[in-house]
Length: 219
Image 1 (cartoon, rainbow, N blue to C red):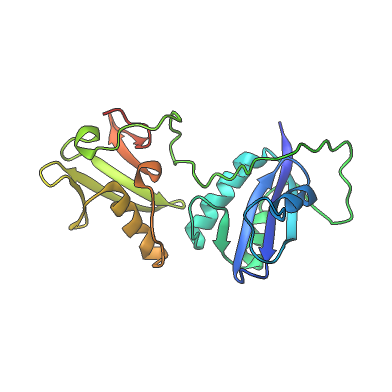
Image 2: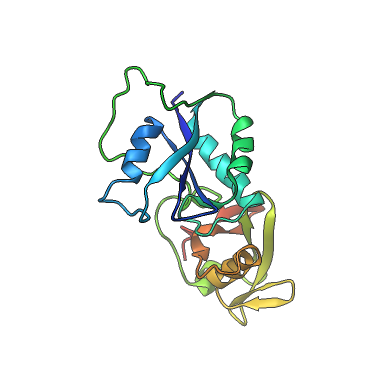
């Protein structure tokens, strides 16, 4: 099973916001990449607050992001930034088995690869899609009365139903004109400044008693 690091970076240009992600290299290597001039970065450099060497880091990152979504604010679902304190993140790190990283530690036989891809799960839907973008017309994707849901974190869930006559989603007596509008209004309950959300990526619909991603539905 692959080993890697879960890390927590801070940046003085973003007070109160932490970057929490994973890397299969060292935290120093990931930090250098995040601070590289050829990638997007804030005006000031990131710094490592702490990191932990764990097994199966990709799955642990997904679980950690889910927990952070549940208990904190995530300004952008496609980025691995959270409005949270270092103390709170450290408590989640304490729950994971592994060895805390120290700046003076040297990883033996570390073979660094150039251009490491950011493996954040921010754009991944809750139910794995096929990877092929599908139908984006609600009249073709859904049937009247079909249940649609959007979840933030573990159990912050809205469940609505598709109204074919009005071509929209009804949830708790309110009408939403599109899937993205439905997801956006849910996100704004916890983050009023949210400007947009791709509902097709982050919602699910019920089919044959199972919840499936709306990302790659066939029309």
